[in-house]
Each structure stands twice: as structure tokens, then as C-alpha cells.
Image 1 (tube, protein in one colour):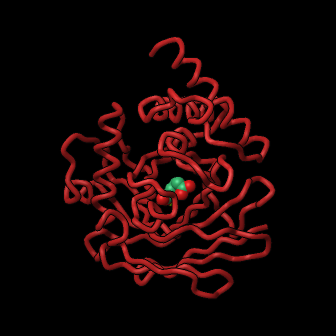
Image 2 (cartoon, protein in one colour; image 1 turned 60 degrees about the horizontal axis):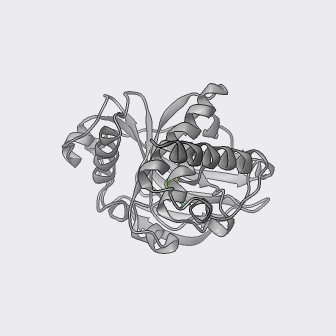
Length: 262
Ligand code: 0L1
Ligand code: MG
């Protein structure tokens, strides 16, 4: 890394953490730093999460983003990405505090709990699924540090893929008992359906998304670890979460999850 790119990396991470801490959004960092390419953005993402870990958070998993066509179309980006989950992002109760977030949106997620470590290269969807201990219903609360969720791929990669909060169900399923491609999720706001999709929306198969994550992390010299949570990517576009509203996701087999904005 040149001294220029080291400086860009440090400025990008400082700015994204400041926006998150101060609950404010801002313009694309690629406008300010044209040298912020995808490789540097992944280094910035790793540094951003390393700073959270130094501050006391614990790494609990990984997430994929932009794995569905609905999300890629909405964001105007045609490539998936990987990012990190920490314990501070996990929602354990029925609600999230909106005053801790900027402009949160909720999306349905099929969630894997890893039974074994997994890393590329060469991981197939079958091999990936064999490393899964159990499957859960989930949601992600995304909260971009960019105004109006407007970003390029390096911007959103550096921003840890808009991660903010996530919740998973308390019931778990053996992957062998599920048809993950056909698994349908219905997204509701205060009980009213706003969208629906099946697991096929996620890279054609959530197991293919998991393989993609393992191969991507392998390229980055990292791995998915046994016990980790993996969010496979929003199945539908995400909906805004406003005060007093409840967003719920009812899966055909995996059960239901819900979150209320407070
Ligand atoms: O803000 C975003 O939509 C980018 C992250 C994508 C999250 C996902 O697709 O699950
Ligand atoms: Mg997501």
C-alpha cells in the first residue's frame, strides 16, 4: 500500500465511524477519494471492524450484501459483497432504538449457523451447505452512512455493507430438512404485506451465496468460522423502519421474525 492509499484508508475509516457515531449521513467517499477502489475498500472495511473490536465488540459472523436482483436493481450495483457482523449489532429484544441509527431499513434474510470452518477457493454450494449446522429465519436492519443510500460498490464495501443491526429466530432447522430455494418469505409492515420472495432470489440458492462468501473470504486470507452467523443477503428490497412501526417477516417453514422501531 502506498502512503497515499494508507492515508485514504485512514480518512475513509475515520469518516465512516464519525458518521455512525454522530448518526449522520454524507456524500460518497469515492467522490473525495478517487483512489478508493474495491481492493482498498475491503482493507478499509477490515480496518473499520478492527477498530470496533478494539473498542470491545466481538466478531460473531459475516454477511453478504446485494445477493438478490431486487437489491442490486435498487442500489444500481450488479455485484454482491461480503462484510462483518459483531455482537453489538445483534438485536435480542422485540425492538430497536431508532435514535441510535440514521435512516434504518429492514430486509428479510435466510441465516446460516456454521457447524465447521469454511474457506475458499473452490467451495461449491453443496460443500458450503455441508458446513452448516442449522438454518434460521432472520432480518437485517441496514443503515447506510451515505445520504439516501447512494453509493458505489467501493463506498458500500468500506461502510461494512450498511450493517447496523440484525435479528434471528430462536427456532433452528437442519438444512437437510429444507428446500432453501423454494423457501418463501413475506415482508409486512404493521401486518400489511409489502413484498415477498423465495430463497431463489439469493444468488439462485442461499447455499450458493454461502459458497460465494467462503470463496471471497478465502481470497482475502480469511474464513467463515464454526459457530458464526452468516446472513445470506436481503431477499427483497429493504423497507424503512419508522417509530412505532413493526416490520415482520413470515417464512413458509423457518417461522417468523419481527422488529419494532422505538
Ligand atoms: O445498503 C445496502 O442495501 C447494501 C447492503 C446490502 C445488504 C443486503 O443485500 O443484504
Ligand atoms: Mg442484508
